[in-house]
Length: 284
Image 1 (tube, rainbow, N blue to C red):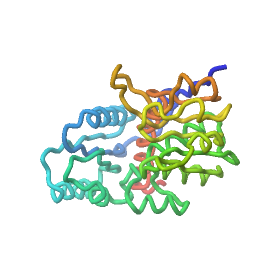
Image 2 (spheres, one colour; image 1 turned 60 degrees about the vertical axis):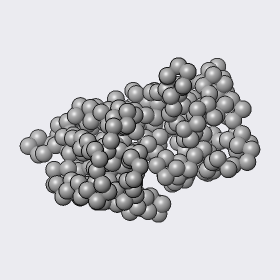
Image 3 (cartoon, rainbow, N blue to C red; image 1 turned 135 degrees about the horizontal axis):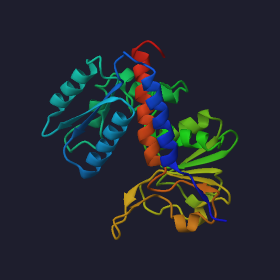
Image 4 (cartoon, helix red, strand yellow; image 1 turned 180 degrees about the vertical axis):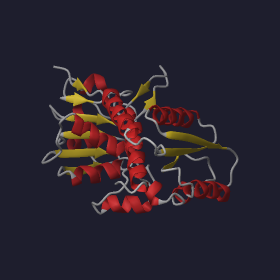
């Protein structure tokens, strides 16, 4: 029996509807505010930024895009600090990647931790590592929420995360550990990857390497979460890290690309922004 597809779009739509209703319960107060900073004209970044902007407006947020060009590090830092000083803005995020010559770490450190709705400031990363998180990166948070809404409890299960980026792999491993899974992180230097991944009840692929995970990597009945996203050079279609044709006959459930984790990422960014808004109103 082929694996069940986990519909991230449907879950994200439900989250956005919940947020819209929550915002409507604050009549007479200002709307939650979010600003996305984009530097340059990277096509993928432009697509992502527009998607975030549209989703934020749909749930009743005040959303803005600060689209910058030919800017120095000093001027970028200054623009971020100016946004940080604006009391109507609850969430600030810097769209990655930045153009060559700009330091993403330096830019991220200009965002106050209480407005860092992407969860990438060192303070928020440290809180997550300590097991007392404030804002968690949206993709790992989206994966965990997807599991929760699918009634998949990580407690006592073996989880393998393939990929160790600070945006997805490492924070997701920490989240799964804090939710009582037994966690292994695999990466480009892991020897005999299939022998590791076949131990997983929950297998997460987050490498950006198209078709890396095949059926031989998957334990029968596993939950397979595909975080990777690349464009097939031949067809132009978006694909993920898993080879669905070989994985689906083995797994219990998989997330598709597109339509799996991606929509949840945007939804959880909005959840983080609403949490920041409540905190700034003294209601959290």
